[in-house]
View (cartoon, rainbow, N blue to C red):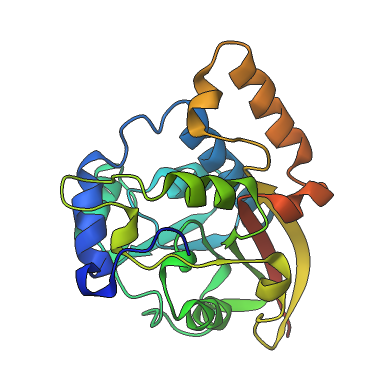
Length: 245
């Protein structure tokens, strides 16, 4: 965990993300944020093309909208009405729900996925178990962990939490970093790990992606190495699980 805010001043995730929603999409159509959202959607697309997919913690729908372009049906849930108001504005099928208690029957989707969410939920293993529950046998669960063995973790430790709204900075909510080994040791029963992918392997700061020439080179490097062994040192370490029958 980086530069934690004292527990007495921590807020609940819903209030934090409702406040964050007001400016969340600003600048996310270019540079670093576009890159990592494109990569996340590309990973999901490998398994969700022509199928039914659920995004857990869909926020304003930036990734969900991309996945919807190739999936047969998509659904999104989030605990923040503020975030979902923007997702609904994109014409997406979303609803307010808790990631630890998904309001869907067993075996409802072919794919369930989550990005930049579970690290902020102390009961993250329960969220993964819920995603496994609602996925059909043979389907896939995809999620990332914030990697302690990464340049991103080092940068967060050095610079501390950034401001996300007028009311809060990143230290206002819980953030958990773990190693790939720790994540793999906590995977739910009834699944098998079928892929490991990395997002943000070598980017020292998001601003790098907007630099002329350098930004393009960095982007190409990230795409070229996301499926390599370097995934183990990515800021966002992505696991793909297959649900056993």
